[in-house]
Amino acid sequence: MVMTIETRKKMVRRATIMSMLLFTAMMMPAYGQYDRAVVALTRLDYVYYNIDNPMSVSVPGLMPKDLLVYIGEDKAFIHRDPDGSNVNDFIVRPKDSVGTIDVHVDERLEGKLTKTRGIVRLRVVTLPNPTLFLGYVRQGDTVALDDLLNKGYIQVKAELEGFNFPLDAPEVLGYEFNRSESFQLPVVVEGNRLTDEVRDMLAKARRDETIYIEQVRVRLPDQRIVTLKAQFPLK
Image (cartoon, rainbow, N blue to C red; front, top):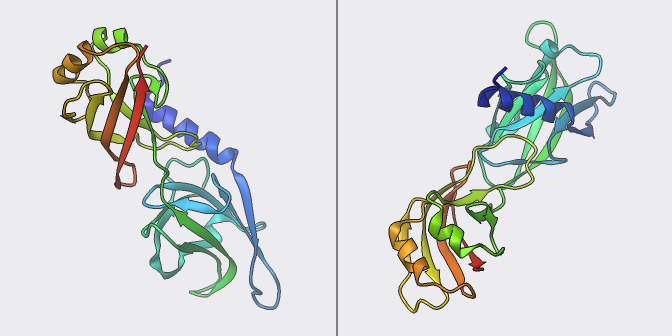
């Protein structure tokens, strides 16, 4: 059986939600008593700006159809997760890159009446800067000069490390390339490939030099563009 990329993403998402950390908040009194709403997140108390953050919402003793889940002050989009493992699964995407959002959980009563069951406050943070790679070599690690000269398809890549839910890969838009003993202006590259001009500079390099990849423009999954740099000692 061949597993498609989409099927694999769904399995990762379901496995992630099944293993979520529980973040439970004691709520303000509703009708003279305290109620609890349970929000399960992949992170303890924060969500990422402009990213689909998986979340599970439940209230013990209530059916999912009896819950009204929304974000206060319209600070984020929220909807049920079409790829979730059950009807308690939601996706929340904050609109602002800083601040907090309040996840409101109400019980639907007869007519249009509702009863507050919980308000969970979550911090909004931006994605961290990714790690740069030259081929499969991590920034700061030693790279073989022969590999750079002889392998036909090598890319400057950026990866977000340590995430336990699926994210689109960051996109390298361009960079500047130089080496420690070149005494030349850097080679300016559009895209993420090692160009012929870069290989020409590498052909003059020694194995005790360091190569510099700077002004690396990376578009993150939240659509922000960050500028990074890295160096790789040659061997």
